Length: 577
Image (cartoon, rainbow, N blue to C red; front, side):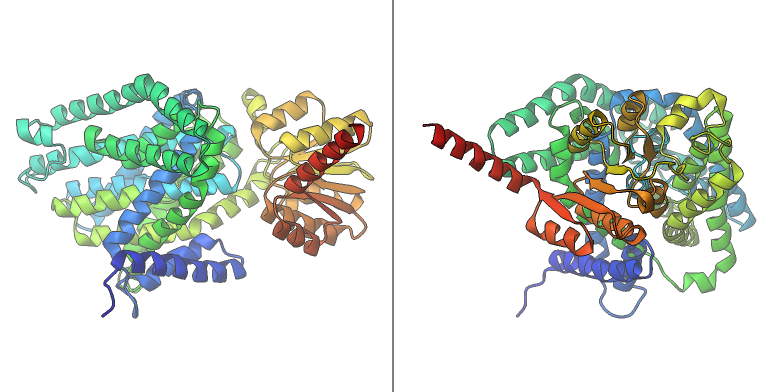
């Protein structure tokens, strides 16, 4: 008799179907994320065939949210968060208010109560953590000003959701839809606090958590990681990183009422001050990606495709609020604070979707008899469709930005650089349509990290014409200070590489460590210029074979060169003795 293993079955089915549908989506030039969502629909209860355990899938997805937010915190310092508070705090509050009012208006048109409308509108106002961060990371915007604003905006939305989850039971009690027994805060339920008391208690608890992390966590967490690193065990270090992320997130939720995602973010942000933060990010990356996939699968499992036919107009109106209403509100708010149009468009696109917090709010609203089940279905359908359409929203932004806000003739500036009060930010952020170089017979250097900076120094010393393709804001600033010509952006993008003029270049030097992106660059450059000489780097024999098969003339594997260098020096010493 076979063992009943729902957890294993859910993981196998979720990852297996996600891989299959993700590969199909990639084949049709769609983001793999679309495939992950369709995999969830296939494994859900509304389609024939196998049905995965929805409860287990949701909990597994929550781990993915924790690890993802922890990784973002590792790259997002407290200084970065405070630097965007002037726009993130009021901007998020105003945008939440506008979206909530639009949702309330739609709810009233459908004959729902004011309480139902407030829950419905609030659920439509909050963007998905996973989707927003994945979009920022794929477009290499996390370290730019617009990326910091988007993440700061997201943190404010998460805090607003924490308050909402605590206040909803009290609101339901006031409106007479609940007896208050489901009050989420046990202290508030025990002492019978009203709406104002619950709000004050929540603010105090969140403040205590933040204070504890800044005072105690800033000392304890980096010390723990350094202690583990000194043991020399990579396995123990990886385990320590995951333990810190999960324990802090769970403790924050249970002791302070803070969301799991927010607790993990602060844990990563505190750890970012450690010199081991980059290594911690690398060690948590594989699990982070795997569980993030399970999140999208779990979302897809909740979607009933027949709702598209049963209630098309309310669903379209909900989708309009999410994609158009929120985006326009966010754009106007960012522009009102004096930020460039390109930044406003990027933030608008990143917020044009809803996700995990929306589901939690909707579920609580139904349990408290505030929100009808039809409202939960609309929120779910709007989330699925907005997540699937989000890549297209970004593509529309890329197409619109240079047409609506063209750069001034003769200047190598971003589309938004016509804003005089944001010249510095405009220079720092990668442009949507990079200005093509005038160089010919030159060398193209991809990446300006530890390897690329050494190569750039040698090229500059030899007075050879060259340019650098880079997308990290800090490195772009260094290159511009040195008067080195740069093309800002990800070289794997066809328009970015084309701006570097590979057709007229003599050499292409790929100094980035990502073999998949390097392969795309090699393939595009070889197609543009069959005579160009290409040198790339790799970390394994498989990567060497992969890059050579795509057209690289020479691939240098770091570990092999280190070994050859050691052997060469050993032989020289042996001959001397």
